[in-house]
Length: 219
Image (cartoon, rainbow, N blue to C red):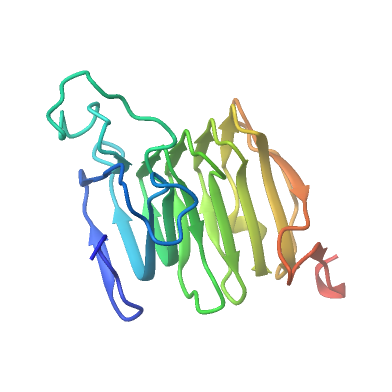
């Protein structure tokens, strides 16, 4: 076993103040390079932190949280190439921090896609990316900074605008909330009243959804 597997029927719940660090590896089946370590989760991952005690996912080289875990003092520092991020079928995050990795969530079997009050920093790819066919994702009050791709990208068969509010980002390749899919409810887009709101874009992001579909009931 090269990582912790979470099967389809299982849920891992992480409580306030939990820190998980990912070791820069020398072996990774299917990875683009030796250090592209991604945590693949077939089941459900819940990270239920608080504002005072968030759940943190970061590099083993990050001494700013959990101390000097690898015991090398200041010899190493974290970077976006230390690990690839988290890929999960179902995810429920509230007050979580993801450093040096991105979040890829969802597939045709997804039932829970919720990321709230969380931060993604220095991702080597996207910040938050959602692909969910039958689930309306909840992505609210999150901040994405310095991602190599778009801040937030969503492709879903059920787009509910009220569940995509309050997000912001700076320093990303695209400071955008990029969406494609099917609008499931009426939606009035109002830019968040924060310092760094995201621009709403409609993008070709998947084989299934190449634009935002708006039926007569939701004009």
